[in-house]
Image (cartoon, rainbow, N blue to C red; front, side):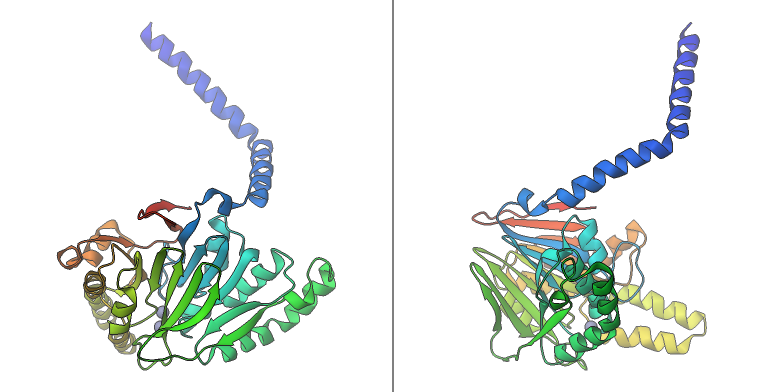
Length: 357
Ligand SMILES: [Zn+2]
Ligand SMILES: [Zn+2]
């Protein structure tokens, strides 16, 4: 009897699954229509409390990583959207997280290594077409930013012509295409104020990424909340100085132990040039333990490790990456992945974490 009931239930489930399969096309179209309208009409900023928010649009390095695209941090300060570095997945991840690239107000670059700028063209294009912007977006950076921005503008100049001709000035105003470079200079003894609006200040400071000069980190203050982004650097006293007492330190991190595995792999495969390259790149980055020491010295409560290298495709590798950090840093530590969101509501001390995808 009991077996008979189970049998009937299985038949019903099979029939249901069969019907769903048979009607998968109209069902998918219906879902797609609903989700498309929802996404296009939604404003994710309305759901976020007033404050400072960090949305990770790229937590990786130049090495291919399924969970982490090229360096990109979306910072939301109140209703303002700022992007720090524009690695290869920037525009796609910003969109995937539900934010509108058309609303990006300013972009800041830490330095001009290819992994920090190879998504800039696409990001500028998405920012232009997603909102019919009439003004180019300011791209702030140290000396050299004009070479990068003007070069990308040049490379995209034919595309601009095609799109204006196709859609018309009313949909895509020519004047809104691309970016305007905003070069700032640096002081050694203190950070430079590079952007200011109501309740918001952005400071830049030099970091140690030799032989790459200039290379900078940023400090962002909105109302009573603050974060520091290290940029690419070896352990830098400037990062420690600027991070003193901020809510979140976003620090680059490279596991030298795991990089050794890659060096050994290259050696075993008789690829001596690749082995040398893997060795060279360890001399201008910071290990997770060193980043943890900086966070402890600066007395920050939350350390978000990003620019993760090498990739960590297995869960156990995350443990290996973090090895020793808990011994030196007593606050909370997180290895960033694309889609991570950290929310710092104004007027509170809390840091809320979630995943946007
Ligand atoms: Zn980099
Ligand atoms: Zn770099």
